[in-house]
Image 1 (tube, rainbow over the protein chains, first blue to last red):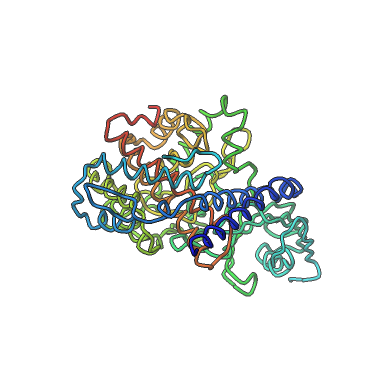
Image 2: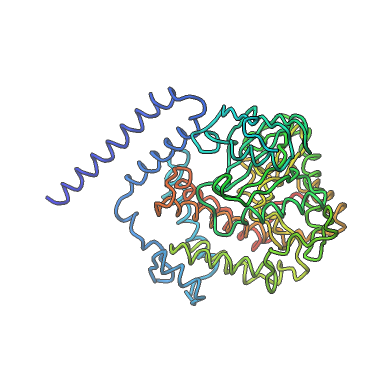
Length: 119
Length: 377
């Protein structure tokens, strides 16, 4: 029951953001004067980022994304391990590959209209 | 004698800020400094750009005194919030003077005002220079194919001239003989490269958020210090020498702007920054700021400076450039997120960071695999 309520709220928020985006890009942005085009582009991009964020499921939002040599690291744990020069028993190539995969996801979240969502 | 009645300020083309609404005190101050009999402000306009500073164009008609005639000047002062590592306005004025006296292509610095009663905060006046600074327009300029090589060669000359300033340089100033204008710039122990790594880590600590890609890249740079860290004496680096921070007119650079980050460093830092992938604005194949080839820049720089560049080191400085821009973008986003200065532009800066992270990881891959050929030399 609680889950359904959350789903409903989440769906409402998504609907609101989508409608706001449609209204803004379809009617408001084009009516703005030239000196407001840059601001309009920023608002549009912000709405795209918000909509993409709302598409993420809980698993994608959780901060336990690095699985290295059987250990799971959150971003903050991995950042600390790297700063402290801890041995995380993984090759540089594998680590860079995992870091790139994380970056690809965040890149998509930042540019959801121009990039396709990575696997 | 100063006569306020003779000063007129018609605030046109203005935003809703105090200077445009009441530029009288600034004009009075300018009349005193120039010794003018009459000073009329024909136009005052806030110029675009500058998250850290505000720039105002002043079109003046001056009668008498040291600058008789029509003058186009720029007033530069702090914006609502400044970045911690940026130079103060008095220091930026000294830097501009040093660069001007050395023959670097910069606006002429004219007057500095430290009296807060005039504007509420310090400001300085410099000559307005013609040209376009908007990076995206510049890299899409139709004339670039013809003028790009000459333009980046000129940038090489300008940078070489700037890098001829060292901590030992004394400047000949009117009436004072020779002066150490840059006494305030901090010196650091060891190489500029290791200093930068420490600075970036300290900046990440201040942010209080986790960035494993940046930590990894800093470790990688640290592990390779013997390859790229230069123990040579530092030179004056602009530290934000990139497309967007110089004015271009008819394919020529008319002025290098925005000196708030300048300091002593390794010459390759400026070159890595200018050639960083994040500053090419989509013109990936033109490594010098999306404007021209590296070989044209390198030839001009080496001829003007008499110094051979360490091209390998530039690759590492490119990685550092991506890290530094990522950190600045995070600091800008934090200014918004903390509520210190609500701004969509600042908030969106944080979303640029994955681009820089991808650039740094790709560069590291290429250097590690021996396939780095980012500069066309």
